[in-house]
Amino acid sequence: MKIQFKAHQATDRELELSQQELFRLFEVMREEFRTYITYGRFSNFDVYQTTKDEKSVAEYCKSHGVDVAYDKDRIAFFTAILNEMKNPYQ
Image 1 (cartoon, rainbow, N blue to C red):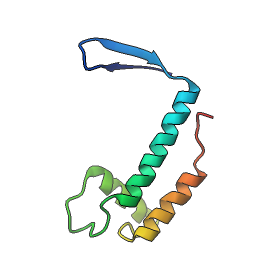
Image 2: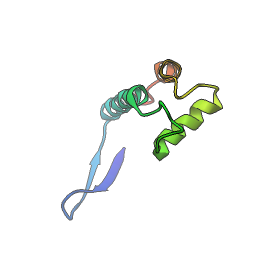
Image 3: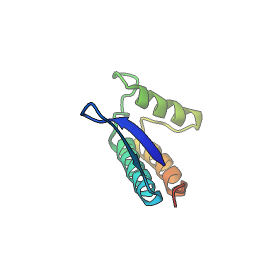
């Protein structure tokens, strides 16, 4: 996979990511999401201001009958999904 991005300098950079690098990136994202679901602000969800991402997670939970504010339900739900989700870069 080739990607292009603007670096901190005024030059454009292009590099190629190997399947192994994409695999590692996917695993990092999966673990970061697991941490977010575990420690994110989902208690008192209706009381506090929420981000777009928190709203998306809450809507996803609601669409599957999962109580986003109840930690054990939310974490168990997403852990089950993440455990079954195969890394497409294997």
